[in-house]
Image (cartoon, rainbow, N blue to C red):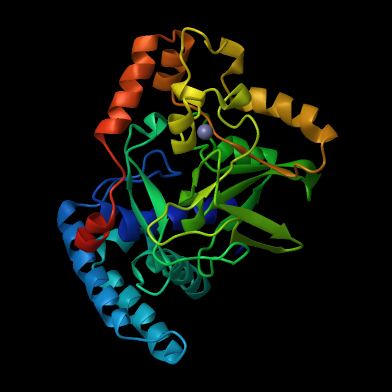
Length: 337
Ligand SMILES: [Zn+2]
């Protein structure tokens, strides 16, 4: 997984997702820049046409035999996207080195539409904290327990306290931050973006982010079937104490987390996560070195308000909403591009 300067990673990620993800899913996915301007729908249409051609070309190529041609298709597709100009108007001053790094970042996201990558991205309506409109990653082939999900990359950018203060707005763009229990090179927080950052949380996950010295990758922690959502566990108490606000499918099926009967399990205001709570908790949990990394996830204000005055009706409403908007399956994948 590549390492970045936080400001550059934010910029690259916002641009790549606005082109490669948003144009196909037809809504604006999460952005680090809170003032990010979505592209014009006419640009989305042109982008979809370029990405459709990309997918059609790769469909006939064999990764074991045609690696050079595949690489060429990636480069040609990126050049075709550049010709659209509008999405890239703010990159004209980039140095050649920066342009190459931007292209590499696009390549990571273009894997979503590569029929041989083994994974793709789809719209997801499960989570109220993102207004029931977000994204989820799905396997497009089987993975064995212990297998690395090759090509699914996350990008790390360690942040100093000053960088964290300048970039992160609590409840707005703090959806993907890793916290180390020990400060490294003056940094305790690390921004984690790139395609792998779209993996959603589940209390019974099927993959994990594995760390070794200077290397991280996504690994299947059990056998994964084609068309199954890729899910990881974000960490203990990531959705409030005992994950009381968790909206994952496992919690829904088990009547736990946000699906617990609110009358018997009303969350207390102090259980609602925020940056300060996490900072407190992170110092408490330093006693447990096994947990070396913790995800911070925060709730949007609307969700906080709902949780401050929980009612059985609101929980039922929430469950109803999810039942009304099931995950989209094969049909969606086939008609995307
Ligand atoms: Zn859960």
